[in-house]
Structure formats: C-alpha cells, structure tokens
Length: 88
Length: 226
Image (cartoon, rainbow over all chains, first blue to last red; front, top):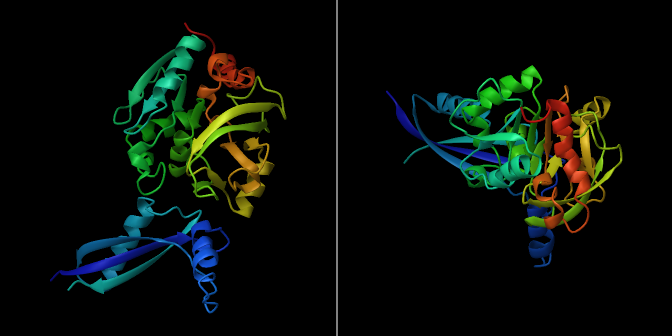
C-alpha cells in the first residue's frame, strides 16, 4: 500500500563558504532593526517533492538517491537536509 | 581540422565563438545541437557561454546531463582539446570534467566589464602560445562566476599545475583569484572570461593580441584548416 509524502530538500552552502545574501540580511536588516539576539542567518534553496512510497524511510531514501545521482545539489559546496512529511 | 561548437538551449555566445573560429582564425567549425552526438573526426570541442536552461537549478547543472556530454567525456578521455567559456565552464564543472564549483559572485551582482587575467599555465592546448604571467585584458559577463574549491582540492590544483588563469585583482571572491582551470591531463580547460569577445581589435579597446593567442594556441595544437 503506497502513501503520499511531501519531501522537503533544503540545499545550503557548507560551513565555511560565504553566504553574502544571508550576511546582508543579518547585518543590514535584522541587526540594524535592533534585534541583537540573532547571531546567524543562512539562505538556502528548498525543493518540495511529492512522492508515492510505502513509508517515510523509503521516501527519504528515494529522494536522497535522486538528489545524489542527478547532482541536484553540488556536493563540493552544498549540504542537503531531507525532511519527510505525511501529505495531508 | 574541425572544431565543434556545442549549442545548448539558452547558449548565446555560440555565434560569437563560431565567427571568431571561422572568420578570424580561418578554422573549420561546426555547430552541434546538444541532443546529438559528436562525430569522431572532431579535433577540438568548445562549449560556449550563455544561459543554458535559463540557469535553472544552478548555472550549467541541467546542461551537464545533455546527451552530448557523454561524447564530450569520451573525447576528454582521449586527450582531445576541450574549452568551456563562461557557461561552458560551468557545464564542464557540473559534469565533473573539471574540479570545483561556480557560486554567485560575492557582490551578488551580474558582473559585466573588462578585467585582466594572468596566465598561470602555458602548457595547455589553449595557452601554449602565451607567456607565463602574461596579462590578458578580457571581458567577463556572469552572475555565478565565483570559483570555489576546498583547501585539499586547491592544494591538488597547485601541485598538478591546474590553475590556468588568475584574475589580476580580487573581483568576485573566487578562491585564490582563480579564473580558469584545467583537468589533470591539461586538455580540458574552463575559463569564466570571454576570449571570443576580445580577439578582434574592432571590439577590444585595450589589446586583442593576448586573447588571439588563445585561439592561435589551439591552431598550434590541432593544426590549420585542411
């Protein structure tokens, strides 16, 4: 029995690679706006997959495989985080 | 001697490249649509600049999966000279034919203007008529031109003499001011600036000779028109 899942793939720069957009949002918007409790903002790209699979684990594995094999992210500079949700 | 110019959906420097190869340097050139194969009698391959697939996902990421890339890979393995300019460089990197990655410029701006390159490796098929440390005035036109490699890869590039061009000054945040690299064998070269826009005096306000030597190097490597 297959179920539908939403899989969110977050692609962001690895630590140590500058993210000028995030730095600008932090320094020139948030910190200038007076909220000193924020110490870091990173930009990322998110891809939202809708997939039919038997369970969350296999949905995650399938999307990870697709992302790796098709170089949806560049492993030299990016890291991915994959989160799976039940489709409502 | 025949040079293949690959055309992807969204290439826009293919005609400039073809014009320079044929009209300026009298080479035999032919366009190849990215869905077709490359014939065996091709002596060099150029991936021109542009915005293949509208830079969707990342510059070059979609075109790197085009069917013709399999043939480019085979030719690279055989030692045939291959040059990627701007988006062509991004495609070669995304295809894994060259190391590294090209990120958004640190300014986050599309940068368009003249800059100076310094020749760091004059042993490649596209630089063998240039002198080491020779200065090349040349235009850049890109949004994702910040070349990045991690420290281990940078050490390897230096050790293998794979850094082909550096920018004279820091312009976009590229690792070690790198503007162009080659593969370990040296036959696959990628560069962000546009030599095809700098090889004629009519469109080069500074000095067209150094960029001309990039094409003359190719002629020295593969010979003249049959």
